[in-house]
Image 1: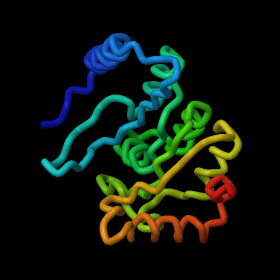
Image 2: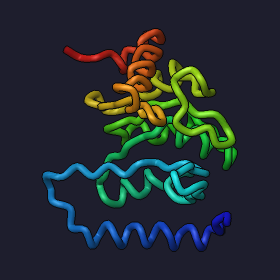
Image 3: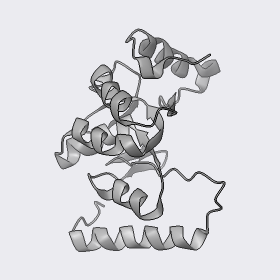
Image 4: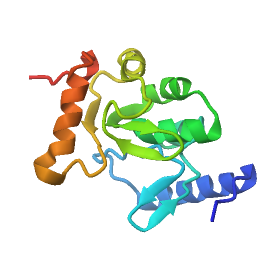
Length: 175
């Protein structure tokens, strides 16, 4: 069943999330990185409609409130932008200053999550230009291809190869 998306209900969910975080009492030496979510998401149990942390202003306000940085998932944000009708690259600009880690994966609307790099619609050179300009300089990332860990990490290796062909400075392995 599709979730209720009224602004009142959404705020209640965000408030519940904030209340839960406050109860955690996260130690100072722990880096807590909430992740932007998609709409919808596929899980082994079926389709799951996520309706928080996937629209402009939500996760960044949450990060401001708690002094957090975040994990930016390139596929999650692509699908959320397509569903809600906001500009993906403007959302990336909003999130980049908060991002310490990235899940790099392609996406294709309406629900093509976790696609191999090059099989979806994300313009990675355009996206990473934003992160090169606006994100912290010590950002980490990893490919998060659906089932990429199978066959001796075959999907992840293909993703790394495909990203390497794009010549994106932010994605270069540092020695």
